[in-house]
Amino acid sequence: MATNGAPSATKRSLGSEPERRPPSRDGNKLAASLADRIVADIAELGWPEGRVLGSESDLLQRYGISRAVFREAARLVELQHVARMRRGPGGGLIVAAPSVDAIVDVVSVYLYFVGANVDELFEARIAVESAAAALAPDRLEERWIERIRALVERERTRECEDHREFHRLVASVSGNPAIELFVELLNRATYLFLAPRTPMSARVINESAQAHAAIASAVLAGNGGLASSRMRKHLDAEGTFLRRRRVAPAGLADLPQIGRTTKLPEVTARKIFDEVVERGWPVGELLGSGPDLMARYGVSRGVLREAVRLLEYLQIARMRRGPGGGLFVTAPGVEATTEAIALHVERNEITPSQLFEVRTAVEMAVLDRVLDLPDDAVAPRLHEALAAERAASRAEFVTVGHDLHRVLAEVSGNHVLQLLTQVLVTLTRRRATAPDDAVDRVPAADITLVHSGLVDAIVQGDRALARLRARQHLVALERWVR
Image 1 (cartoon, rainbow, N blue to C red):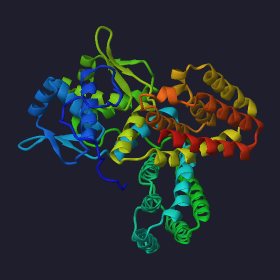
Image 2 (spheres, rainbow, N blue to C red; image 1 turned 90 degrees about the vertical axis):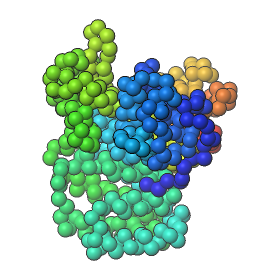
Image 3 (cartoon, rainbow, N blue to C red; image 1 turned 60 degrees about the vertical axis):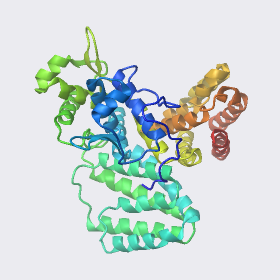
């Protein structure tokens, strides 16, 4: 995924009080609070990849914390792929680039927990990638033309082994790093639903190459509508292929991969994850106390602590301290995905306008699904959301005013679109509520009026009017958050 260079943040001394902080994921625990501060510090410094922030002893002094707390915090930022510890002479905490791997990990755990299926994933892929294909012709630069032609030829002669490369290229041509991120994320997520070592026949490879060539032809001809429709047709065919090759009829083909090394803490975390799944993911159930788990898995306290950090980061389980404490099973939410994506948004200087191009594609797909549902399954939930808006105070409206979008995603019944909607609403809302006078500037009455008109069109089953009002509303929201 292309980046736009390091953010042009105002520089300040490392360890000083940041102007803003990302919200802590772990209450007031010292390690989580320190990890949040390190992330904020790196962002304020302009995200200088490869820079050594300091040795362990330097950072202990700079942040005024214990070695144990620092090492837990360092592990947290490593899990986010924000920085990594290098041991030995010249070592220390080194700034890294946030990786899509970190997002794939949290997304895969969440989708496994909620029972998402391959149809839901491809519906989301069609929404985002058909939008990318529609945008690509108008944003096609000279430098992309030869790359597109060369890739089509490599696929024709079977010199290209990764068919995702074409999808990444179309996303890059769209000129929107947010689209690039979500296309890569959803393409990577596709493999969660594919049985290991699933072969592709020569016929399937050839059909995929032909479909890519047809999309490329439309892009090079400047026909966004045709490129979009061909991308949709291609993804429909890919989804059909995947459904036929599945081992099971629904859900992920195998457990999500958590951790990517053979280090003992990650191996231990995977074993605990297996136990959670074998027990049926019993949210709230005690897996064992610290000593119990150390004995069960034959590991030290330090190894267990690191394993627990990974499980907490992925929202699989959480350690509760004190009498009656221990490791308890938790329900994964969207927060981990939101925070992982937020790092990419900040690092790549993704703008609200770019986020809204993805959000519009996703929310229009949600709307189409909702419009296909019977009225009695939709109307009560939407009217309830409108009633909450009307009853909200001006301060409450900053949050409540976005709830209709979340309700529509929930009603749609697509877990993947619901996840993307919640993430994108949260990210764009953060941009909208950043100014100190945000509460006073919220056009609450206008938004509720627009929401009411949208709900009326949905309940009446007027697809054209509902789509028109939804698009106009999203355009207005984009202007407000800039």
